[in-house]
Length: 122
Length: 107
Image (cartoon, rainbow over all chains, first blue to last red; front, side, top):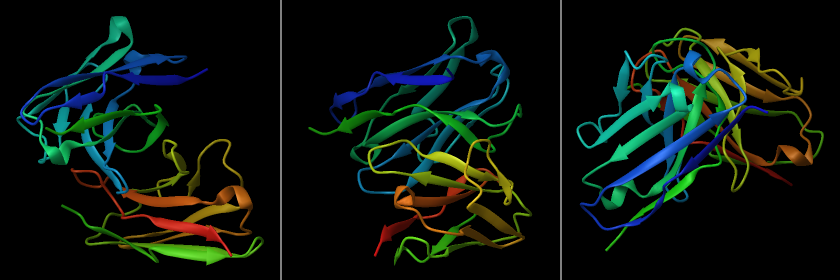
């Protein structure tokens, strides 16, 4: 079964850090670009970051650029999001999502994890 | 950034009704448009990619059309399990952007 499972969410104070992980199974992880998409409580979807299959191409939303770092370990079938200098507006469910196609830039997200909640509050 | 505007924001329809949602891009995005369904408390699910291609396993009552700036998503016969919020998403330019969502309810 193709599956993505996120972990690492939790409650953190403003200015703090958190590292999210996404474990992939059931497909050749190293062949696909991967993404993080978030959803603030009661709000819509916001793309956060993308990384190509070999980590050669990395993209960020302006709202997280300079604070968040996406990475992957193809040997461990894992995707990561290191989040620093967290703000209240980063509070959201964070989803990892696979790209539908083998491409360098994000296109369509065909497999999603269940999400992990990040709450930034004092 | 490319702005994606969906309408309506919400709708209420009866089982068996034809439901149409529109999505307008702030600039030409060719056919680089996807549609997702999100049920409460669940992750989004890809339904339509490249404006009109049905994702594998998605029922044929769902369809999409359009190109350029104007796109349409249709449920030909609304079913109780279609209660969800639907989002369009463009990938012509970075950042990838989503519409604000359309909440579909049963009347």
